[in-house]
Image 1: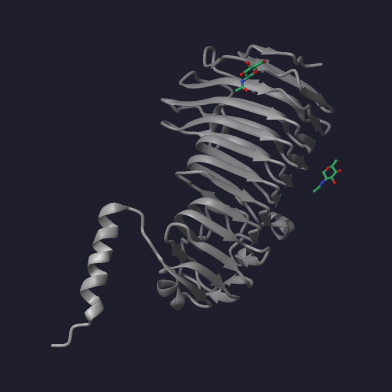
Image 2 (image 1 turned 120 degrees about the vertical axis):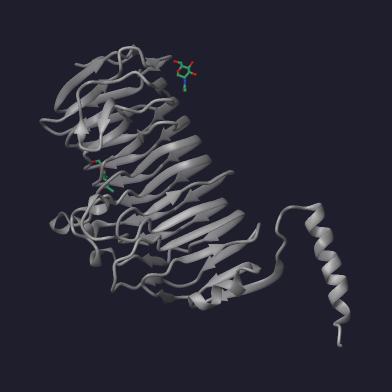
Length: 366
Ligand SMILES: *[C@@H]1O[C@H](CO)[C@@H](O)[C@H](O)[C@H]1NC(C)=O
Ligand SMILES: *[C@@H]1O[C@H](CO)[C@@H](O)[C@H](O)[C@H]1NC(C)=O
């Protein structure tokens, strides 16, 4: 029987590494991907180049990466259509990852599925478009036409996403694009999203469950603005900075919403500064604790605490359309607490709106 003399040595080395470090150590090779068949081999390397290719319908482009991997996207990626399925279209996991999107288009061909119902009904649609479970950095990713939600982010250690584009402007035609949230964040720790450009039909970002999140210098056009929530039972959002964003032509600009029947949940320590909000058709700033999927009940509840909500630092300006409200706050009778210093908020247009059960200082409906 022939035994490779290196076999024993390399096995021992592997065992030694495995015992000393739980991290997965990769080979210093460069993997190339130009079809799904290349993925299994490529993910054994810590440098991966993705060339232009088409992903067949019904299959997830799934990258489970070694720690410290650098991914370079070197061409456009297209997702094929032809049958309804649940997705996700693309998924990446791993720690300390450097993802260089290089602005190449990742095309979800959403128009094939768009029926105006999004994830609320109609056809089964692949979602989300890109599930991101890495720590590290992700730059210059361009998502074009997601079938429904675009990015879903769940990072367990620090992650910075910069220069992303979510372009669903095509979905405005006949109102067919729906629930096209750009970023859904859930189970996230230390996430920064900056310098990104979003044009869609739903939330620019929906922060559902997160600690230490910064959303800075992004532009949001056409959707539902920047949202914390909808907060469900057991979900907590703590430590959020929303700064220097431009939000145009959206239903609302800045929003916090908690489900009317949610318990054991909280939103704490949120700071808004330097944002510019124009053309809101419903609300400029809205905080509501009466939310249900079929609308708001008008009766806020107390089981989700909302505390320390500030507009401080650089001025946030909010301008709403005729018939819209500048500010609408509906807290439970005892659930909103702490400091609500709104001295850097300037609002104009539409109607002033109303504040119930929140002790806001520095801003008054006028
Ligand atoms: C957003 O609105 C501002 C102010 O009206 C305008 O200067 C800016 O060009 C708009 N940006 C986009 C991306 O529509
Ligand atoms: C809110 O502002 C007050 C000062 O007005 C400050 O003491 C507090 O730390 C701020 N909280 C947050 C979460 O920014």
